[in-house]
Amino acid sequence: MVKVITPSDSGLNVVNYTTGGGAYTTAVKVAALLGISDFTSSTSPTLAEVGDLMRRSEDFIDEFTNSSWRDNLVENEFHDFSSKRFGLFENYIGKIRVHNENIRKIIRIATWNGSSYTDIASVVSTLNISDYTNLTSIVLTGGGLTWTLSPHNTNAGNFNKLFGERTTAQEICYLINEQVPTITAPFTKATAKKVLLDGSSTYSISDFFYANLEEDETITIVSLLPGSDGTNCTLAVNGGTNSIVQFTNKEDYDRTSSWWDMKDTGDIFFRSAFPTFNKHSIKVTYSCGHIRVPAVIEDAATKLTACELITSDDSYVLLGNDATNGIDLKSKYDSYKADVDKILRLKRRIIYYLDSE
Image 1 (cartoon, one colour):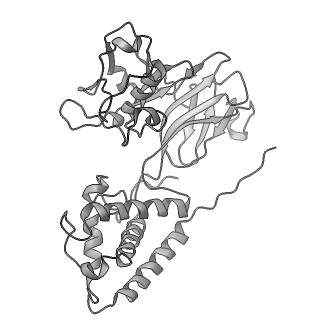
Image 2 (cartoon, one colour; image 1 turned 60 degrees about the vertical axis):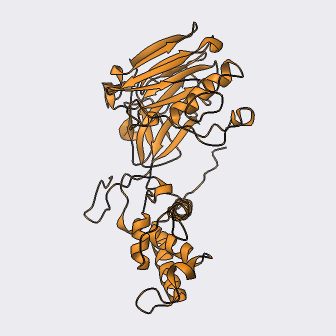
């Protein structure tokens, strides 16, 4: 059973830590808890500094509980495949269980046929960069929106094409996914994650597409639009002799089709589109995380951030020694910390690792 929503859940937050918006709480809620004025760019600490404390608090909650209430991307998780039958699921050839529960979206399932991977779970397009020097732009469209990817050696909103075909392809993937270019950064000298908005400067490309660089240097681009909506997406390449394959619906998802899944447990069942090899023959890319933020998690994130503020160098300037109703800072800290500890112990997920050898 997946609990979708309860009346006590908070609304969706627009996550932007520099402006005080976190996944679990906001700077406004932290200020309200402490009984002080809202944080701004001129307060001490600033709004952006409080956002950084919120980010750290939310990471701590995820790590401590072995769970998450925000969207997390897992790329190219490899699995062995064994042809077995599983009780009530005996009309299925076999199954895998990904490493995380609470799957939000299966972005890609690729099965190994002995020479290449076959996509069975997404609407995909491919791009082969064979003439990177003459490449001038790549244009992706989806949902009536347009994103233009252009080369530039230093701009975080572009891709770097100075160092060869594979580096160019990897840079394009980072730009589509709006990720920190960790592999290419040592020679491109990039210092921040890539960001690309559509022509109206409103929509992020990574909310609509996902890109992966294959071993043969082909770029696989997946539409994140639900179901067959992705077939309306287009890919165009300008400059050079680079080749493309337009978006094609490879998804065959249904209880009576190739595969289906149980998102709460992370199980994926294969009926017909299964690999012909066993070891490392399936790779899965997916997003995961509980789809709702319970009020207790919001409370824990708010109070944990408040604790960080109380123990910071700026706490006396910001809060004074008696900020709210005569409660001193130490008593306030102890009360908040006790509440956080109780909530996180309640939500902690125990993980058992079994040796299959």
